[in-house]
Length: 640
Image (cartoon, rainbow, N blue to C red):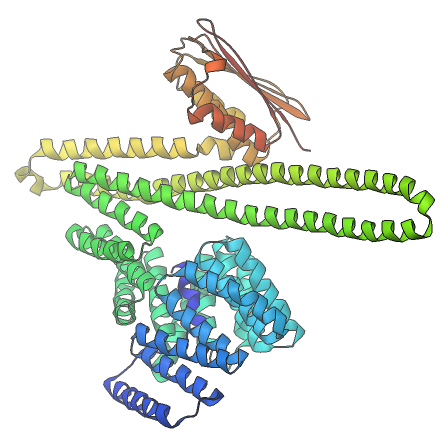
């Protein structure tokens, strides 16, 4: 289930559950529209606009719904009715969120911050913080989302708003779950369910808790919640909660290999999601159905589901979903022997991956820039305020003691200059810290993505290839194989072996298993053994380093050895590590062609190494002579 599904917690609409309900809603909408001509332009009319917008939302007419929510806001602003204007804005943003316009939602809510703060409306401040948290969560700014949810939670607890506390905890639980903090996520989710029992939000909050349990792989608890919700919605229709429960059960049963059950619930959830045109639900259901058909060897049906899911994902620019669908279609191409199509899809998926990673890095940089600019402005304001204060002091002293004013002014101006200089130094330090933090964030993001991709390759594609090989091998043993070209089957098995070897090689390159399991020394030893011209020696303390430093040093070594092989044409490469209790030195020496360091290439290799070393406040020294060779030394401090 995708990250945006918690959003149903605040949606004010239900899907139509039967033709009789549809007729009743149509009559209700007509009666509300007829009331418009007789309702005066006061607060009651703003409520009427909201009800009409809700009814259009029931019918799936989002454009009409937005039209009436905007009318509600404009009339409320004309009447200086702040609550009505805010409610109209939230309902309008709900529709924008539904259609994936997250940037617009965030901008609209940010414009409301000074308005509610000036009005000192604690209830609206609480709701705005929660909505800002949801907007940041939708855009993948999980740390900022947690910050806003916690602010909203604090406002709820101040005013003893039990229902608001429950809603905030429910949203916070899903964000914690996406950050991998499963214990915190479960604790918040359970508190949320307890707080909203007997309210409109109970079903939606219970769905969230089921999803948190499923993500934490507590399948029994998740299954119990989803089944309970389906039973509840049989009597009291809540199609959003029902559709999410059906999808949750489908994905749960898929994870536990109960494919027949999974298919049943996924098809039912898909029917509801398509009625509501909810993109993430549609792609989630179709993609999982495609996986099931792939495992069942119904490759044509699997391709149909994956293609449909890809069309929806591309329509709404859902990059993560596009990436998954392309990989499933590439796996199907491998089975069908369409290797050219497979490579094309893999290249498209890699391009999407670059977009997702660059977007995460951009988001992290934007957050750091906002923090840096805020601190910089505060320092400048503080400096200006101090100057104004000192100016008033100087004027008073000049009137009272004119003779001493010149001397006093001299010392005060000198002190002010020193203060300003210290502020400038502080700003420079903040700039440096910003660059280092941004680099570290990039490196952490790269490590996390490499680890995830290596795990997905090993656990996902590896398992599928192994299963395919096992089935083909069994087929070879059957008597019916006398009628099949054994040579073609053997060739297919050979291709599978090559694919599995290549998959393992790619996964090992992304994140060597020996690095995480046995540490830096063993990982570099294994790497150098695979290169005939490379030799590795290790001196000193062999205690384990910080995992992030392990990854950083391994990547630097990998880049330098690669440069020596590709660019220096080296016939001998020496990799050396000297580790002491408080410092570590890495040296890579080769007898290659060397290079002119003053005419250094503009490639990203050495620049990436400099950034990695700078992120750990280390030192980098390059000693190279054309025609003789190159030696690169990296020295880092080890924090105890």
